[in-house]
Length: 323
Ligand SMILES: [Zn+2]
Image (cartoon, rainbow, N blue to C red; front, top):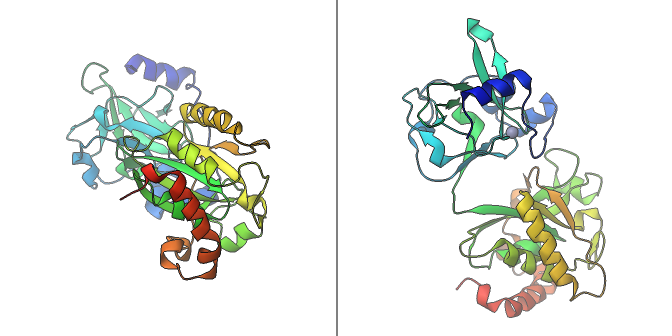
């Protein structure tokens, strides 16, 4: 547990090493954030006191950085400070937040930033509740909350119309969205991704309840429902946008993913070439790509390509399907 002395030490002698770093130019952040989010996180702004309902919200869950999605605080550490800003008494991990001396406005304060992307979060004070005695006074705008019983994983395995249609049918899967990730431009369009020049893969972002379907199950289903042994291609679809890829969010997920790949390698003659990459950002695809199969069941592609895939998938994983 961090105490005031630790915070002072970090501010004076340097901050702990984060698990990963996300760095972007102000122009790149501007494209990802709303003007208000940009002003507060990238320009060290402060929201008006009591401007967010988040102050009085104490449901279980986790709070992540609005800029880079890194988990920063657990709702269990949130307390009612009556200051008008969401307040926490501890970060989720010792290296989640970085600390910096701030002498602006004639005050001596310790600024709290996201240690992954340097987003300004707020300040830390030594008048918090025991046992840590810390009060992290945080702008609600710099946070997003995720329910504790839901997680996300991002998979690429060829055309996202197919991948989305499969995962939508699984018990424990709350939401599937089609999009892009893993490339080198912000907010890519379908056309840019199709050209192969953006470096992005067509992926789906799956929101699931680990109590109903495990990460390992999702991995097994993903690797058994596309061909993970063909580099940069999937059937007739050729190009790096169709590569087989898994975006993990934690070291633990990476280890689990490697274990499942080892386990399934036995059932393939060729080498599994699925990439494992740390998740950075999910760019949601254009609206007409979302829920594509369900909205276009009569279309030639759905009948010729997706239907046979779905049938095979439903036979293989009958006991994991929604009613
Ligand atoms: Zn961040």
